[in-house]
Structure formats: C-alpha cells, structure tokens
Length: 109
Image 1 (cartoon, rainbow, N blue to C red):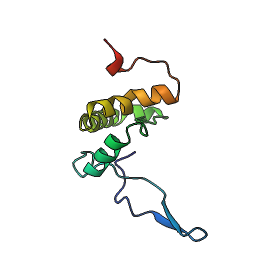
Image 2 (cartoon, rainbow, N blue to C red):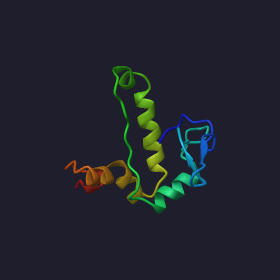
Image 3 (spheres, helix red, strand yellow):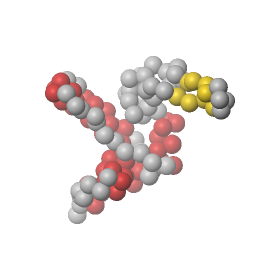
Image 4 (tube, rainbow, N blue to C red):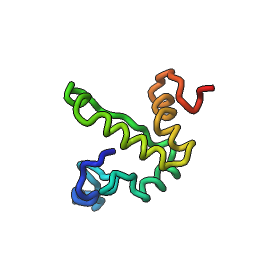
C-alpha cells in the first residue's frame, strides 16, 4: 500500500496466454490530500482479515526522512475505518498471520 502512484490503472498488463489483466507497480490508496480513498475504505471494511499495515524501512534514511509523516498518514487512514477493521489491520492480522505474540491495543485492558 502506498501513496506514491499517479494512477492505479497505469500499469495494467494483459497476459496474452490467459487474456487476463493484472497490475504491476504501485497502487494509490490515497487521494491528493492523503486521505484513504472511499473505495479502499469500503474494501478494507468488507475484507478486514485480508489487510495488514507495515512500513518497510531498511535504510537509515527511511527512518530519518518522512517517517513521522508516513506514520501519521496511516494513523489517519486507520481512523477512517470501522474500529474493529482498524484494530485488525493495524495489529491483529499481523499478530495472527506471523505469530508475533504481541498484545494489540484493542486487546489491552
């Protein structure tokens, strides 16, 4: 999930063997104001067990440049979802799928 794409359909490719289109590259989940697009809100709320949030920071500059802004963008995006959906996408799904053994905020007392 990213906000770096110009157009989510720009990279559609037709597989000539199967006559099926598939996408490569980035998908833009956010509008020009960095709000999660309504179609993605609906999709995530309807398929809450199919999404996780992760920031793939490998290099030191990724932690130093723009990290706080990316975290705030995702916090805002999660806040636009149903509470149960947001909790699962933020922590619960990753905890279950990858057996992290962590306590998610929604589970804390």
